[in-house]
Length: 557
Image (cartoon, rainbow, N blue to C red; front, side):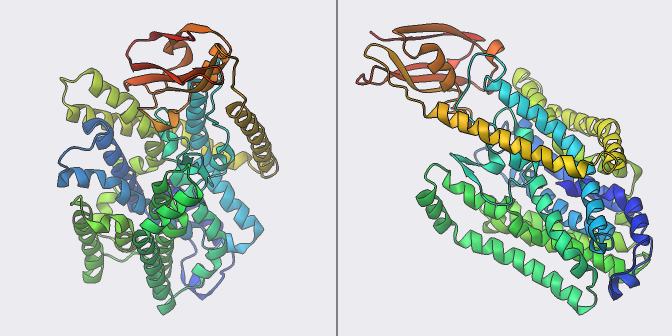
């Protein structure tokens, strides 16, 4: 979702652009200096807020349980996640092309400047949030306890996340995929970072497309817009119509993976389809660049501005207002063209709508929208949901609105204290510190380290576990798998280390020492073991782990 982080660069990017030579007739028609468009800051707040509203409704009001029956109101509230992402991606295409249409095609220096700007804007806060989630995951798996390792390998997809490439392809890893690998009960904030990877794909593609887009004008510009819209619809319709065949293909070639993961990636996370939204935004930016100064909205401007906005509302209600609407699968693509028209009209014409989205409060919240996107999971899931559980007499709506307000406040604090200072520091020090050299070297070292750890984890998972007759041999051990499927065998390493080879085994499992893998969920503790190579499989089961410390006892009789 880096689209939400781009708009504060208008001034710097425009100043840099004014020093470059025009690359084509279309670029020569644009002004040398493009002013900041505050209404688009308001729009990026709308995009981030839409996602937050949907996620908060799911976490707090619905408590992550779909009601029965599902109402139209439920569907519309949850639709904010899909519509908000379309707003992000189209807006990203607009602001990236608006800011970099001259500098990126100018040569290697312009491309490096583009990378530095994107890296500085996105990476510091990403690294902070991802680092916290990753350390939390390691803690929950026993890496810091000195007590146990598990067969879950948290290092395998690490290089993909650090390079923002986890959604560039469908990377199956065991029973899950790379983009969802860290979406555990404890690390939901990292699970939302698929959009950063998809956005990074757009940036990479823009390095090759910037020169062509900057030369478009007239009917060619319109033709590219139509082609982008048709490509996006065609890609998603084809995926929708061939869901059964794709599911069967996954089941045949990747039996450990969830068959629906591939279709979900293709129809929602895949940058190969969603790049059409980015291109529509870039085309809208090119149209604004060719249009010169912003006129006061006349009849044409009013029709484009208010007609497209009303069209988006009607499309959202028609597509997402009914739980059985078949268009919900391709709803983002149906809305993308209308969103591009809204952004173009708001940026090009001075209207009441653009003035509303230019209000100082909305502009400030727009600046903080990246923080809102990355931090809202902690506020609404980890804390608001817990409040709803611990205080059932308090209305969930009261908790929802209160914590939504808190999320807005804390996101702006994060922007002021973390995002903005980090952005300035990285920009000022990237070249002097030669980050363009040691940054790839660091990624290479991390990748090598991850490979070595993964090899070790595979060896532990496949180690010989047979024991003599009358001795315990643990084959499976899971704590909280009923809460999260990724917790399967999450305590296998612990149980093998403590119990394998013994006639009896008894110890206290203390969640304050080894960490609760699914806080707030009623977990079961299950161990499957045999006594010797020919022994029958036995089960130790705690159906509900409802105390901080529970006695675990295995025995061979």
